[in-house]
Amino acid sequence: MAKAKYSKNARGEWETRIWDGTYNKDGTKHRKRLVSRKSSADLERQVNQLRNEVENGKYVRSTDIMFLDYARQWLDVKKGVREKKTKEMYKRIIDVHLSALDGVRLADIRNSHFQFVINNAMDKPRTCQQIEITFKQIIKMAIADNYIGSGMYDMICTGIELPKYTRKEKRVLTQLEKDAIKSADFSDRERAFVLVIYCCGLRRGEALALSKFDFFFSDDKNTVSITKALIFDHNASEIKSTPKTDRGLRKVPVPTDAAAFLRKYVSTLPGAQLFTCRDGSLITHSGYVKMWQSIVRKMNHAAGGTDALPVITDLTAHIFRHNYCSNLCYQVPAISIKKIAQLMGDTEKMVLNVYNHIIDEKEDVDAVINDVMAI
Image 1 (cartoon, helix red, strand yellow):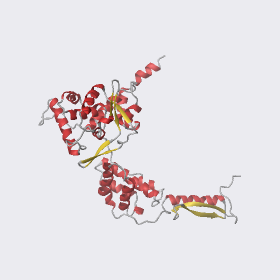
Image 2 (cartoon, one colour):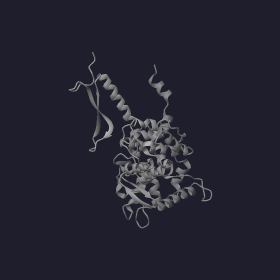
Image 3 (cartoon, helix red, strand yellow):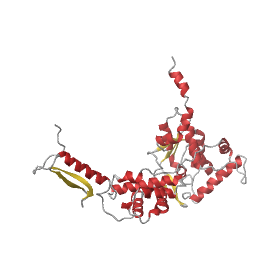
Image 4 (tube, rainbow, N blue to C red):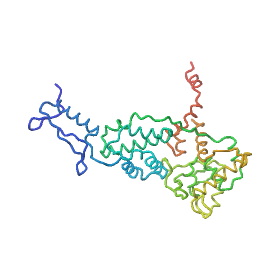
């Protein structure tokens, strides 16, 4: 005979205590006493029923807070330490898109509200992705706060119809652009910036934050340490301690020719920073824009274009970074995906997601199978 799951109390009743989804004043879970005079199996039925009610929101904290107010609380609590641009993105989603739910209580939020917000932005696939991420995170915090039952998450958040989003294909540098880099009449500051983004694959903010103390030069080894990044707040700028998604201290090799120029360049700097305004302060956003426009203009002239008829267009600093990573991926397995991710300051998953097509291009499956399986 199977052993009963629950035991009897002194009165001969089957008894247990189960969390009912609420909390005591001291923050501990409030447990409801369940009893059955019939059997352990009958008590088990009561337990399952209570758990189902808790999951589906019957036992939650009572609140009249509006969804929009709670969304702004979520932004302050959960995203207060995120980068400024990230916070601005979430704030825009709440103020522009989730504001359509003004007047709806958090406790009344349902799947139709989620779909309604998505439908209003259906012509903006990337925005719909951001709405989805934001909405789901708000619901998760409401569940953790016990304003919404845990079982309600799937009911509210699944089955949402989203427009198809096609990621814009990244491009590498063209041969025309590569040739222009060599012959363009750059100033020393401009050439230094181009070299660190071309030869080291740095993000724009990482390159702009570099100081002379980040470089190590020797006869047989040259490296640059990436420990910080410069970010813009409108026109002002500041340096943060660690770059985006980096994994600890990151050292990137500097090719010999680039190292020779950079070694000479940093030795002539009056201050520590590589890229500054004329007064020696951190480069501002407008200062960077002017420098980059000058770099592109000089590359255009070197490539045979004019200001009126440019032959190089849509060139950004990030294209240099993509070019760097793409070239490394073409060298697999001489260099591993893990090492490429370390050099880029990204995860292996990101490198594989973005550059897997390059690795696929290099694979010659038929040749490998014929070689290893030959009889």
